[in-house]
Length: 148
View 1 (cartoon, rainbow, N blue to C red):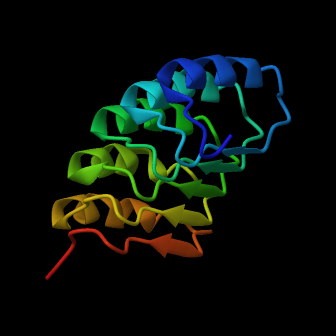
View 2 (cartoon, helix red, strand yellow):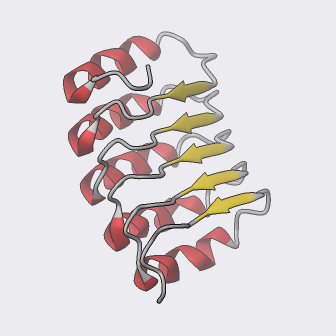
């Protein structure tokens, strides 16, 4: 459903329907205009998708509020290997929400956080938690506000 204008209402309806697909392993919602509200609606149904291994939410205007809701749900997705949150607006506050759960994502191999307005404070919170991700092979923090 990438590059479709799902927005909040569409995301809620679609993900509710997807909960009837317990073997679903991949959700690709790049540039679906979710925003924080749509991300919250997606998150409300993610807990039922326990087989999920890949979630791509690139370029969805997700801010800290949306990250808060999404991270509560991702703590239940124990098989998640690939998470793409690139080109959103999560900032330091949103990366703090990610830091609170990423250490529990023991299957995570790929994490894309490029172009998210993350600064030194956000990276400082993420670093110690990412160290707990023993399977992590790919991390992209490019185009953030980490240093000069």
